[in-house]
Length: 108
Length: 116
Image 1 (tube, rainbow over the protein chains, first blue to last red):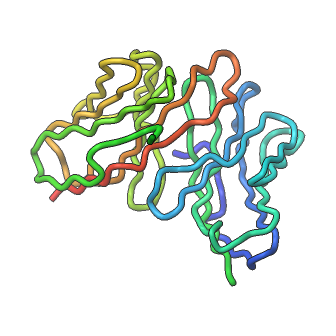
Image 2 (image 1 turned 45 degrees about the horizontal axis):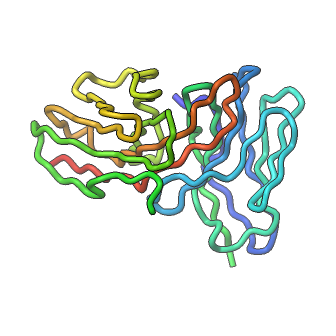
């Protein structure tokens, strides 16, 4: 069973922000939240991660709630190439548990 | 150079056979993983190895036996293959985490196993 839960699918208009939510209510104090995406059946690709603070990199932003029970991945300007399955994960020292994934479809 | 490479990419075999999937990483990482992705796209961790030692075995049948000859390799051997073993298997590697699990994992391109 997945430790994180995500909506199964979402659509986003090209050029608009895509906001992908994730619930991780069982996350412990030393576990990080990671986001990966998978395009077609390729290997998962790292996007971003965080512990408590919000994070931003060249790909996305990650907003983590103060109680750390949920987070949102933001793709600020979605393109057609961002169409993929996005996985929210929680990770400890030697594990990396994937969520159920959200299939994001970017619509022209 | 490919960071995490798996061979073969595709594997079709009959029920009851024994097969192996190889994984190599050239990143100098200490931790390696095997994941199984089923038809519903759920990625389930199977094994975690840290510097050639088994750390996690997520209730995987003992027909599955990982072998790590050195920390750059983690091969997966499967005995007596069953129809339900059909899936895509991903290998991944990650630096040693220490007290903070704040480094990313790198994944191979997957091995699509079809048991007929």
